Every structure is written in structure tokens, then in C-alpha cells.
Image (cartoon, rainbow, N blue to C red; front, side):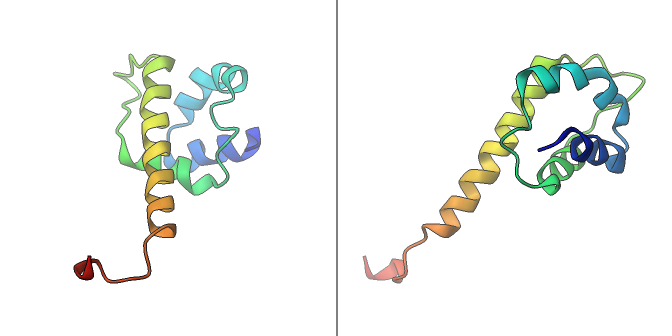
Length: 91
């Protein structure tokens, strides 16, 4: 995902201070390169609470939280895609 879309996601959710704090790390690690929808980042930021004045968050922690969220999102997406066509009670 491009840098402008990522910045817009952070701005939309009120976490622009996190983008400003970690923008270099986002670029270097490419953490959002495999994200295909801006809504995933928005959902992640809405699911967690990051306070501006008490934010002693490190990038490694942020990265861990996002990767867990993104993995679970992908897992859920694939589990609905690969759901069998037959009734479960038959087996």
C-alpha cells in the first residue's frame, strides 16, 4: 500500500501522531506493503487504543500487534473461502 493511503488511514482514525512517530520504520520495514485495503489498517487502529500523551509504544510492539491483527484477518478470510460445501453434521 502506498504511503499516502497509510497516512490517510492514520489521519482518519486520529492516530496521525503514530504515523509521524513511526513513518520511517513503516517505510524501512515495509510493514504495510502486503496490505491490500486501507480498511484493514483503519480497523486495526480502531480496535486498539493508543493514547497520545501516554504513548510509550515502541515500533516493535506496534509491529507485533499489527502483524497479529493482519494474520487473524487473513486467516478469517481464508477460512470462509475454504469452508466446505457440505453440512458439518453429516460427517
